[in-house]
Image (cartoon, rainbow, N blue to C red; front, side, top):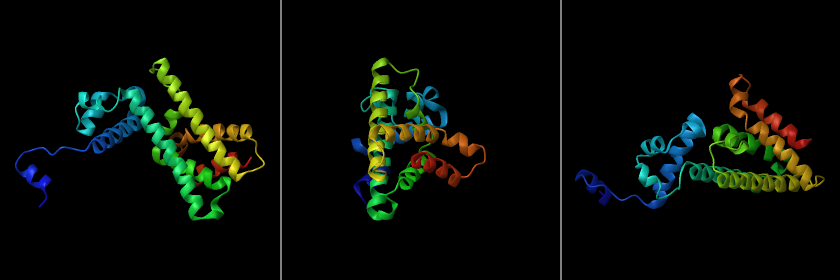
Length: 196
């Protein structure tokens, strides 16, 4: 029996590590944004879903926009890590197809979070919109760099154009799949854009 179990039996609360608490908040925010969109998600609902008080959330994040930006940054980092991991484990997957598959798979698993990266959220303050634009620009730049490594004949500007087009499609993954289309068809469309 560990000390945490004894504390629970005696009615004492165990102290959660800050990283754990932050992860709980982000997981709840991700779920809320995916189910209700940015405008439909509230700090109170996120707090209730995470089991952390509303004021407790403000110890970690300045507000709903900060939560969204943290999720978007994590989604971009996860996609880049997945691309690097895939190509490191299987060099045959270094072409644009692997990049397309990672983007498509990420969109299908992250849903509305990727969609939110595509649009500027109307409820945001100007400074937050600026941060979102920087995040979007960074994501496009990083993905374009990855594409030029796989298609050496492309200039960075051409690669950025293809990435922007692919992200526009990726942002519509939920709608596309809701029509009854299958996931493989979705991957093929994203692949075609990056191969152009």
